[in-house]
Image (tube, rainbow, N blue to C red; front, side):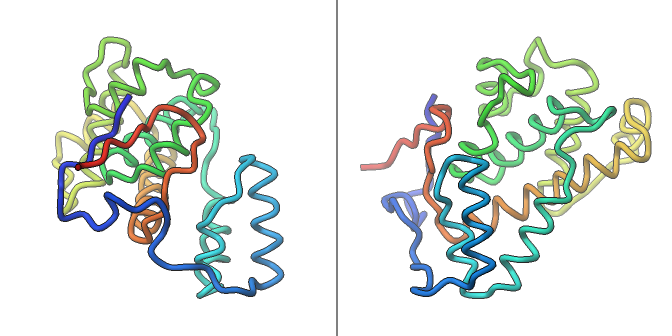
Length: 202
């Protein structure tokens, strides 16, 4: 699979690293957080080191990540993975596509479904009606301006409870936060999977 940048004005197209460097000395808590994240994801992540320039951003981001839904009896791992991959592709954040596609099979997604999400093919034949409603909502919430038609609200209430809608919406917002932060800082792909091959312009 290839993720293609089409905008030749994009500063990050030809860069393999963020355009800022982390501070030379990292606060103890950020070093500890980086150690824990490395144990979990088996990668030395750049983002906590860059956020060390403003530790409040690092701490608040860590709290946000620790408290969002990762599995739920209604909004299960498959639905949450769909949200995470779809937002990542809509924002066009290669790092996020890579990281959020990680272990997609364990969440109950197939390689073809990841490809369908990457290509915005939300009517792919294996996606259920509930999942298609979810993806339509993800698209609307991630778009600017955010416009939610009454028809969409009715569809949501047909397929999800109020609690489920809150979990879905907060997850969309959380992934948007990370995707825009990471993309804005130009964090390169970390290589969690091979689903995000970046094709650069000559």
